[in-house]
Length: 158
Figure 1 (tube, rainbow, N blue to C red):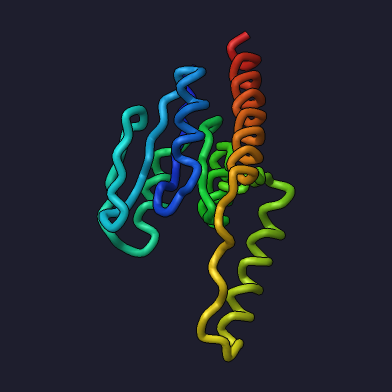
Figure 2 (cartoon, rainbow, N blue to C red):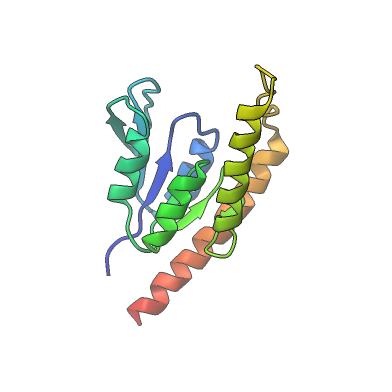
């Protein structure tokens, strides 16, 4: 059996430290991918800096991940490709991407982009400030995902 890894789409990801703390408990390796505009460092994760370019980090992450890995991303497209490879995927909000919900999420993203293009508004509000409750929600959801994926891998060994 191959070893499970966790891949983090690190550009502007607010849950890196939570993922690392939880991964350490199980000694699960983490790879943090970022582009040259968001150079990150870590005492736990392997950091992979990808050349700047549209979607360069996304494609590198998808090329690296495999079945039963966990991908942390806010990008629905990356999540969809991870699911296709048999990986688990989770959003920084704690929401799991699944084969059952990803098509709807991609459609909503498409419609949102289309609406923004036709809108006369030049500036849209950014995301609201992240709270401690947001972090707690993510941690609980991520712990559940870890437990499910570890249990699944253990069953495969038997």
